[in-house]
Image (cartoon, rainbow, N blue to C red):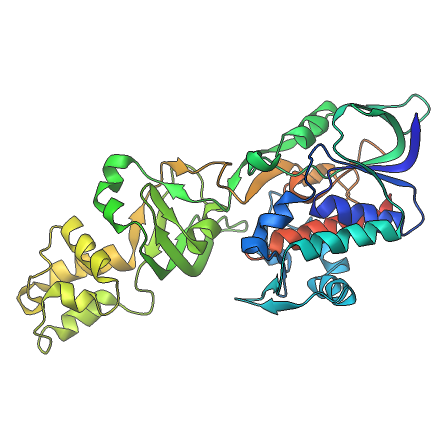
Length: 402
């Protein structure tokens, strides 16, 4: 039997960060992963350049049923701390959009950096290696049965992620371990994912596929002591089945099935007031007027969807009809029938209930020595590098505690 101080299951972002942190403290660490290719989620992220953090990352950028949980780890290991590590390894990077940091060259650089950090602590690797069972040992610690032999460890860290992108190896292993040890779960669901609509409802918009524009989008409630709403200004993309783009990926994490989303397609303009005011001076057809602010194909489609002819003259339309059109475009309210699911989701919302964990160490309160980090936990970041920052921060928190 191989004996270690710490066994980390899952060699993704959080797992490698945790293993490196613990090993550099002098712990004897084994890092286990069932995949044949290391850290595939890092490799494909950011179009292959890895959006490795966001300089604005803070607790407000994360969703959880227990929203204060993430504060401790995020405050103790910040975006600036990870950037310092990137600089230490002389990896070139740049800010692309709203604080998002990307590698100048390749996501492989982040993977190599984490491997080097693990090597600096002499982390032992078991890969590919499948853990078939995990049990508490009679004399303390844990026994892991794997397809490469038995492993004994004083502490075990679960860093196996969520259910998103099964084709690169996502499994429910972490959830099964949590349930085995009696930990509560927050129901997992796809997040940062395109939304879909009833085909009949969506039929007028199928021909809009490929159109992109900046919008305001919101959903949920902003009232009360515990608001559930989200609101973003980002780019939206029409698809054959529904809506995608950063605006929709962001709002999908807040959306609950059966509820609508509200989209302002021209956020910089009160459309009804502008059209009514322009009736006396603008002699153009309505389609041409709208195409000042919307892609022409979208303007025409929206008019037809609302029973208006694109060649109707603005001056001929009654104010009431223009107010109705303005509301339809400034407050387009539609209810998705679902999402593209885990196959297209960038992350999983939900997971191990953080009320079961120590916010300082990430250890399960009722199972000494068992830790959960990263996406396996009910902490979900916004689009734009935030989920990687949670991986780094939660990995360091556990790595410093094991």
